Image (tube, rainbow, N blue to C red; front, side, top):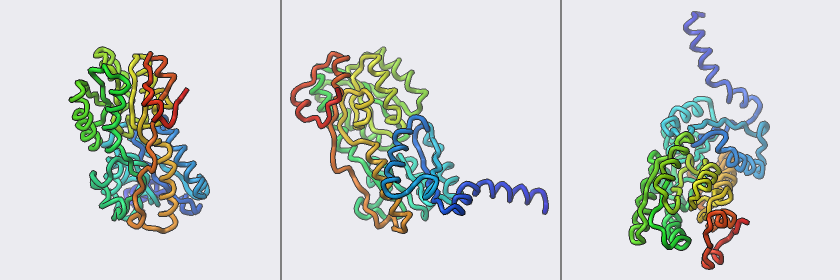
Length: 325
């Protein structure tokens, strides 16, 4: 065999090696396109694995997970998606709109499962929630509806607020829409919006240095997977700079944010395992309606409120589903 042909064959074998071996072991290869890092996404990945266990799928036996981490750089998703498709993934789990789009362009055959994406219909990922069409289904959020409500709660908590910082990721097409929505809602209240681009962990400290210099009354986190994955760090830095945080992610409140109104991302990851199980059993994504959360939670961190000398209005207390002591 000629050396060039041998090298080519060896390279192709190396590319297909991970999933080929697992196929011999009767384990399904599940690709995972993560927006953040292995460290920041760890709690969510554990929630996904919990859901897979609840659906009878044991890691290392029924499936092997192949994660790829964008680390906030969404331009990496197309290469990752093509790699997973070429290696023979049975399913590709996606965590953000950019990952879903990259996976759809990489394959029209391999099922794609969403872990909780913003407005998949409006962003062109599915035809409708009831009839998704194509090879993608899973969990959607209600963030387009609940994000404007955060402004109302912010005003109720801080009626004298005149400015708020907003974290958003321009690589996420839904974030621009959400930022516009926030501006529309805050303008009549006399609250100025100062937006800050954050997508990678390395950008977070610099963003907080700038925010601290401007001294806004609050920080609103627009829903993006890479940003929300940084929840514990955001909450810690905000508390350090004495800035109350409001978010659509209930988990961020548990990490130390002041108030959350939305869903638990860990629950959407856990529920997305149901769709993984269904497509591995042979059902087509086109026949599995996209699900949205059935319950929106309001969470308030009383410990954070006390640390920031903020009194929680009775109307907020009575409405809250979870009061974190």
